[in-house]
Every structure is written in structure tokens, then in C-alpha cells.
Length: 132
Image 1: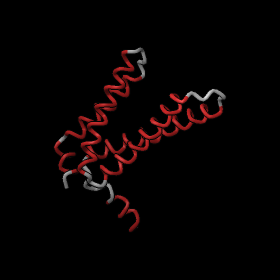
Image 2: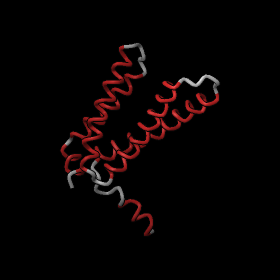
Image 3: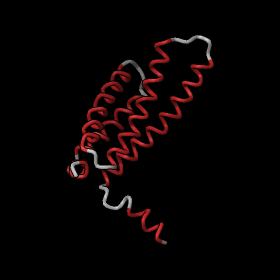
Image 4: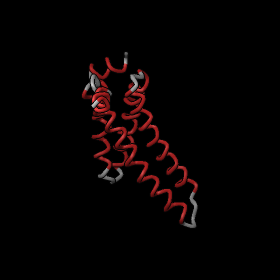
């Protein structure tokens, strides 16, 4: 019974927008790492090693790790994590917009996700949480 009580208290007091952002960042990190890992495995099993493709795949893996670290840092009330999440989401939304213009319509979902993160992080409850 005591374990259940403590488990629930970890999330008690965290504003809804913060919980949503943490969930989005962790889920996107997990899905991205699985997808990037699969792509990396395919890349390494092919015989033609294009250095640009390898660099791009490593960059994607790094971006997924950054999502996980940002989610954890926001959960720990880190003020800079909020700023980084907003800036990074805006940059990623712009990159996804470029992808949409070039014909990748699936990137429209990414634009929406990144803009949701920005809106949630700009809310006063999110600012209060990260400024503790």
C-alpha cells in the first residue's frame, strides 16, 4: 500500500501541460530511437557506406536522445530545459515545414507535434513549474 501511495505522489503536483510535454518527448524519443536504430542497422548491413547518410542517421539518433534528456530535465524543474524545448521545437517545426514543401506530407504531423510542445511550454503553469 505504501508503494502505491509513493508512486502516485511522483506525478502529483505536476501541471497537465508539463505532463503532456514529458509524455510527448519520451514517446517521440522511444519511437525515434527504434526507427533510427532500424535505419542504422539497414545502413550498416548494406555495402555502400555513404558518409552523408551515416552522419544524418547519427544526427537523428542524437536528436532522439536529446528528446529524452529534455523530458527528464523538464520533469526536474530545469529552467533552461523549457527554453531549449521551445527553441528546439520551433527549429524542428521549421525543418518539418521544409520537408512538407518538398513533398513529404507525413512531416505535417511533426509540425503539429512540435507546435503543441511550444504552446504547452509557453503556458503560465509550465513557466511556473520550470522556474521553481
